[in-house]
Structure formats: structure tokens, C-alpha cells
Length: 87
Image (cartoon, rainbow, N blue to C red; front, side, top):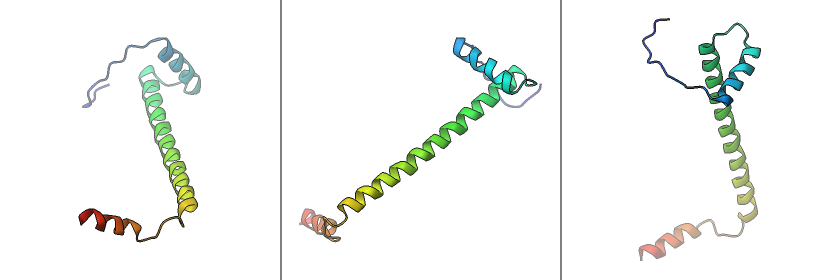
């Protein structure tokens, strides 16, 4: 099939061949090239979703820490410290 996009060459190893075989079961009418594309895009989506979950969890943990130590410091303490550094 003609395309303006550059081709990407991949040498399959045992793991990739196994992944292609599993993909062929899910998408039996797809060519190997299409299977590779679908696997790549599915992996990318999975990575994006995992990254988003980690970011949400990290934000929750930071909020929990803030709740624990929120009253330990004067709200103006950082500015006071900066003023001391400038002096």
C-alpha cells in the first residue's frame, strides 16, 4: 500500500511473535502490519492510562500529607524564611 509515511522495520523475536499470535485471535481479519499497528496503539493507550492513574494517586498522597502537616507551619513561614535568606 502506498503511503507518504516512512516505514518502520521490526525484527520479531519470540515475545513479539507470541503477541502477534494473541492479537490475531482478537482481530482475525487483520494483516500482520495492522496487528502491529493495533498492538502499538493499544500499548500507547495503556501507558497513557497508567501515567494518569499514577498522577492521580500521587496528587492524593500529596493532599493526604498536606492534611497531616497543614497546621504544623505558620502560613507565612515560607515568606519569612525567604526574607531571612535575602538579609
